[in-house]
Amino acid sequence: MKRKNKRAQEEMVGFALIMIVVAVILLVFLGFSLNQPQKELVESYEAESFIQAVLQYTTDCRDLGNLEYLSIKKLIFNCNSEKKCLDEKEACEVLNSVLIDVLEESWDVGINEPIKGYKLNITVNEMEMLSVEKGNVTSNYKGAMQDFVKSENSFEVYFTAYY
Image 1 (cartoon, rainbow, N blue to C red):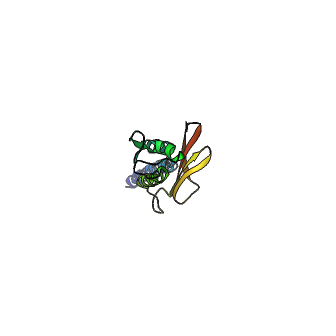
Image 2: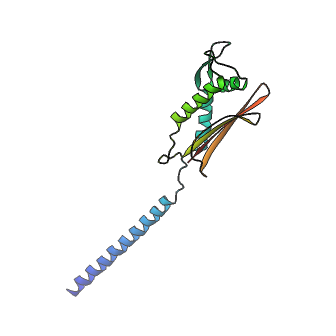
Image 3: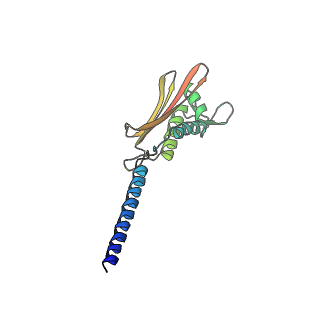
């Protein structure tokens, strides 16, 4: 009888050791999974792609010369030249309103949102032409810049998303 009790105690100790080993292995895996770097809310390629897409966006402003609908990029050129659209609206006014609409549709901003704010600047020869911003500026951000030249004027479009 003593021998059976001793054997049962040995089996209980073995079972306890197996449980401890399994628990340690689970803790190690849990530690590795928690130490993985968090994915950024906004990646650099997203900001770059956004600028590229915005520059190609077609507006409702028609050019006086050839009656084509202008992209935002061409509208920037017309705004710099102080031209008007076919419907007599100022190119800069149309550019500003279209950019606000595109930004609000593309980026949800708010306290309870992942994106806390954004800023879009357009400069010509290092002078600010247009700036659109919404939300809060934080220390965490991703941004991108696109530059192009036309008629000896250097244009730069900067976009920054704050999270």
